[in-house]
Image (cartoon, rainbow, N blue to C red):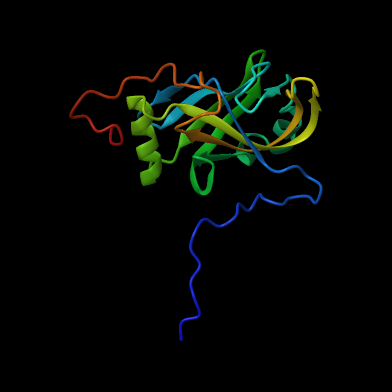
Length: 186
């Protein structure tokens, strides 16, 4: 006897953390990428301070400080398109500087999706970074609707096709190895 089947996307394991917590948010930034095609390493800005996104949010300097101290880079997930079922690798460094949240990541090139992501970044087809977080402290301007995010609980940073900021694009990608040379067996 068949009782039925369940299809569709399961809810994120991050959803519903804390009874009074605001819903998880996604935000993209001006991503400047540099990649290493041999090791699958890349870097860029996952968030910029003082830049309004299309959702009318502005991340303020220091917003990530508590998360970085509490979790460090290993505690923030590196995902494909914000899908918790598709981790791509690990963040090796996450730090705030004067411009924003600068990150360095390493793709797990033993996974097909990570190799696909690297190939797409090298071709310029995948060029966005986007953060998944819960807002802890915000200040909202009632006249403009602008939210200033002063403290963020950062859960994940994703490689995305369509980042929330229009200028969130790859700026530089290192050249691939010469034709005929396999970058995985050098």
